[in-house]
Amino acid sequence: MAEAYRFCLRATGGTEVLEAEPMDVPPPGDGEVLVRHEAIGLNFIDTYHRSGLYPVPLPSGLGVEAAGLVEGLGAGVTGFLEGNRVGYFSGPLGAYATHRTIQASRLVKLPDSVKGEEAAAIMLKGCTAEMLIERCAKVQDGDTVLVHAAAGGVGSILVPWLKALGAVVIAHAGSAEKATKATALGADQALSCAMEELAGEVRRLTGGRGVQVVLDGVGAASWAASLGSVAKRGMIVSYGNASGPVPPFSPLELGRAGSVFLTRPSLFDYVADRKELEHSAARLFEMVAGGVVKPQIGARYPLLEAAAAHSALEGRRTAGSTILLP
Image (tube, rainbow, N blue to C red; front, side, top):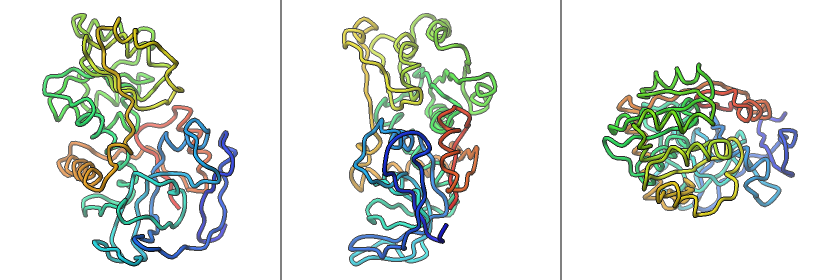
């Protein structure tokens, strides 16, 4: 493989569609910055783009998050210098590459306290956590929150962040080992029971009331448990499809569950302008600097082995964050 390369998605499907190809390093255009990637974040949304669950025009790049060094500046760029350590987490697609040009408005400078690998492991997941907790659910001190997949990439950030705000956290994970990790992250209760049993356990732990908020990145497999666990006038925040998308349902089900609120947010709608993007990143870096959120890198794969990394993620064989190294 040539020194500079990228992944180009020319068809959707399984991991076999992931192929790298040589590339010429592109010069930055107006308002753009050339970044040499040091680490690339692996996220479930990458698998959704690859599989076609989230359709994208083809051919397409892949990946929305990376960290690296500025190697060139286009006309009109201010606020960045060559050699700056930078990261991005809101696309556009194309992070699976050794180099890329990207609009300066999508970049954030990395603080000295955050290494490049850590940034790639935490920016999208951490800013997702900020959005879910502070701007979607608006969790308050004393709220009880159910976190699905609590030892995963987003879950392992949600749990300590919620605890820092004074919430009571009931964590659910796919195995006893992962539940133990959720306990270590600060969960008040960590469960690994079958999804069919989860709502009953949550009701038992809450005196029958249920939880004010459910943070659900699992999707199809967890929907019934989420609906059965939420309190009257509580909120389900459905933000992922790790087990497939939530099946069609009638809004009447939300009424029967107790006038429940449901939102299906996308981080990209919450960092749509520069002010929102900077706020989200600054809030995350504040939590990292305070020791509340600690980047959990569970695995590192060479970028050229992206297919194996996708298989591990989809097979629920990962804990914490996985990064790809060019």
